Image 1 (spheres, rainbow, N blue to C red):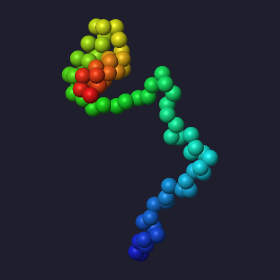
Image 2: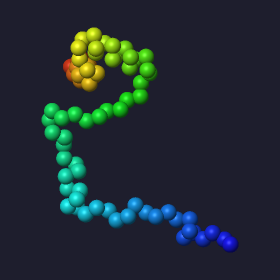
Image 3: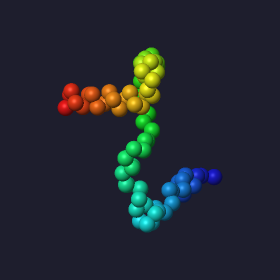
Image 4: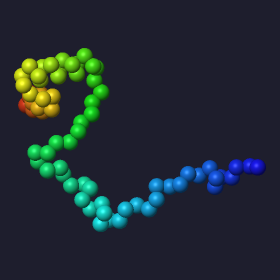
Length: 76
């Protein structure tokens, strides 16, 4: 028995959501809230960053924000 093209097709994604359901999905995140950021870096560098932040009693997120602000001020 031969397999037909219809049998090979997978079901689609379905119908898209209505415009009412998606009206708020492009709004900016409120100031002061945080969102996750994933990076792939060398484990030794991550350990250095974690230790550096811990020695200064700050979390890694605060250290990254401070480093980013410094970079922007000094590198345009």
